[in-house]
Image 1: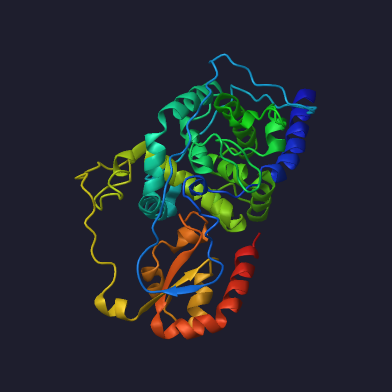
Image 2: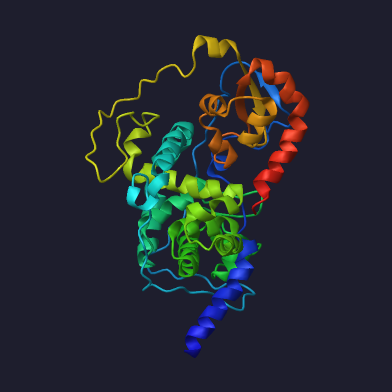
Length: 392
């Protein structure tokens, strides 16, 4: 009984420490797309045609692979190191099409995955062409820790499998571990050595950290959320709603964290079940996500109908925005039908959740609403920030 009390006390203590230490909103396109931050648009720009060209560079692959019996280095100046447990029982990792898990959100998830593959197809192609060595190391380490293999895709959305990735917040390596988190999990981080860049050591630390989070949250989507924001925001949302369902607590999580979980579902679903469509650039319209139904698909690229009519194109303006605006507010203040806004901007939710491949979004609105938008732009931006943040 005393041992159980000490374990609970220890988990509570390091949870408080890690809640801030591992808070690091960052997305993998930042490590693959050139200039995604340096070319951030500072002001709204009205444009009329085309999408910006996207440049990609190959993600770096591992240059060191530790043997299977390698041990994790001890942390410098760290009084306690969490070693984790290997006998914990885990639930499966939910993927798109599992209606029994996602319930009424099933179609939303499927639609998100479709849009995600189309928008991030170039990045997914780069990762897919460089995944052999990293995934072989990750799979072995996750298996050693009894962690479901699908968790390897967390490293994809964290760093695009770039072991040299460094975020603006200071997270380093393929698993984007913050310094204090890495040391807590037993890694050496100093001026001469940074184990966060070592594939084996960082993956072992990440696996034990994931195991720790799971022991508190008992659901992989909540674990992914806590990995991004730290455990405290997730626990606060659970306390506020009384629910352990990601979909129930989702509105009370940071937007970046909401997007991180959705990006993980999409990436894991794509690599596990839809990888053959990466080369096509889209998922065939007749593909059935539901695993409980027979899958019939031609496997041919989607032939899309024109998204907009000629009259719509004549009456449409595109405004480039660098910060998300609350759609209901936009509809009310500009007097635009909400359904029209949703149809003209079908991938807007990815921008809201910070999973869009560029730091700006080309918002489509009627031409006769442009002047009203520009006059209310500052108000819309400020009010949207308040609405997005009011539940946090």
